[in-house]
Length: 266
Image: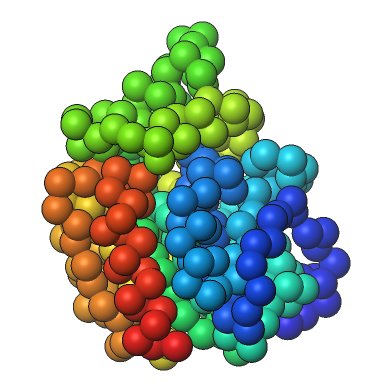
């Protein structure tokens, strides 16, 4: 760990539970720490300690001067160094999964396991039709004058199973509606620059990759399966009948996959 990491300030975070195994939870570009409520509840009931952050620019955390996957990963490393325990597992969703991968690259000696939800090892290169549509679908409504509360809930629902409902889904929609526009624009731009395929061969820890069968616009199952195949000790699980937010669309199945993985590996 170099001095530049230690100079970074910590973001806002919550700590729940007591254990020598800590799960660090990293939300996606649409998100904040509050939307992990049902995952935190299950993890703590199963005897684990949970640290959930508001990434820089989200929730109560200040907007950083530099917003990139790499800069956020450095702050994540600071958080792990400050709050980590004997065993540290980093669980990241979507953009949070990208941050988790780069954080492992920076701090492999303190990260003992990864749970990667609906994410990828790279954006796939800029300028392609799929990449341009990815950005346009998310940012164009802001350019037309709509606010995040006006369009984000409908957009997120399109990324889920059309029949998805329940308290966990409602919580995601509520939390996302409170996001800052400047943060979301910066996050989408950061995602388009991410390239983490160099990290995959370095991962010599247990890794759980969870995809959604209906997630065809953000982290397609085939992309996640390909990523998992490049990690020596990775397990790949594809949840049926869920889209990009499997942990909210079917929290019972998602939580069981995570608990089972942690119990077997740690």
